[in-house]
Length: 165
Image (cartoon, rainbow, N blue to C red; front, side, top):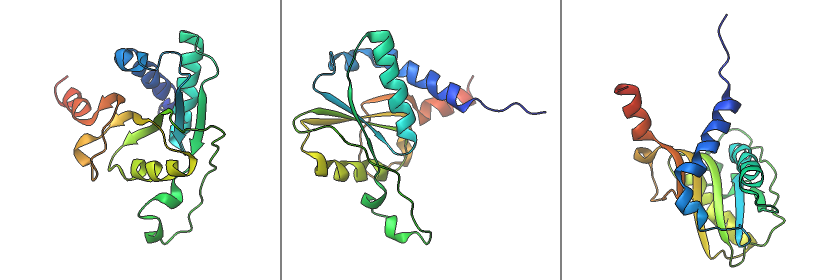
């Protein structure tokens, strides 16, 4: 019998590691009064929920403004698919005008989803800054120049640790 990989446990552990490894950068948000966390559908939502839980329980930061954003129809490749797209819900009950926005997703690969998210954000106001938090940054596959503000793993680090334990 094979063991099932505990994806949720691994994901939680990775999110838990983002805060200590990016402590100085995260401290600039102080009490998060001027910050909005936005998870990208679908997998960024799990990270958003876990990150809010960590900030509330471990750092005693309450009432964190957050939203859920679907970028399906903002992608530059959505018309190229032969299958019918099924978007997820967008739940943005926050104003991002002049706020610091942190977009949250699982993996940054080509950068197209993040470009779509930046376009979608225009509908909700003009933030003072936008940062990006991802679990994994696959930096050598980028099609667009999208920088990562907070991450747990960079692809070259992961590959190096696999090749040279």
